[in-house]
Image 1 (cartoon, rainbow, N blue to C red):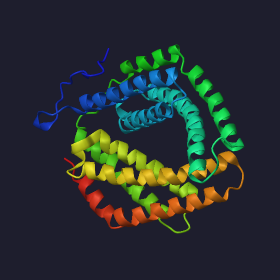
Image 2 (tube, rainbow, N blue to C red):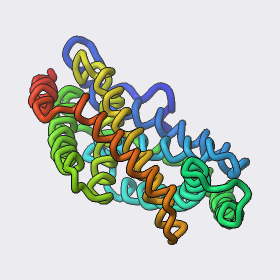
Image 3 (tube, rainbow, N blue to C red):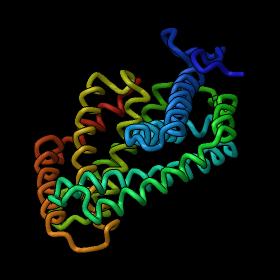
Length: 287
């Protein structure tokens, strides 16, 4: 069985004595799978804690992005099974998280605590939380632990960590700035902003996977993207809440407008259109 902390050695080492792509991929995948296992256990024990739900969603996203980056090194059938099983968990977690967020957003929009709408949301949240706890049974947790044996990476000859980083980061960066252009328009839609948010997450998690391999500014770029996520997350929370309560709410609409304005200001300060050239140039020269 492949160890969680020490991936199997590979005869083909990279130049300079660094890890081979197989070793590198397995280490990243195993670390992220381990995080899923620990957050799953916490969430199964206490699904009422919003932080457990949040941590589990982030852990699954980070692992899923690593699987997406290294999918060509893994068994395709097993990749499909992992994604399918994690999607069910993410769907349930998403429903719980939406209700948690809706309560917070409505309070921020001026809705009274312990009002009828607040009680309705909390009651629905508790019911969904119970369904999630039931779904995260011990048998399912055990099955996910078995995935450690599925993360046996096999890279074609000639592929390296650097070439893998270039292949992942260059197209993702192009997608990110394309989505940025759409989201920056004054008439941007909630769907366009949501697509930008998803692309931002994938780019950030991919930068986390490759770390210093991605260039000298990799940590700064992660922080810039994190700012985008925070602003987009705040606006998306309002949109999700509006859909969830399915009724007009003037305070919520005012809060949404303020958050959209804050997002546009952040974007104009930190992500000028010309920045794309610098990002792409740096990722293309990874070696």
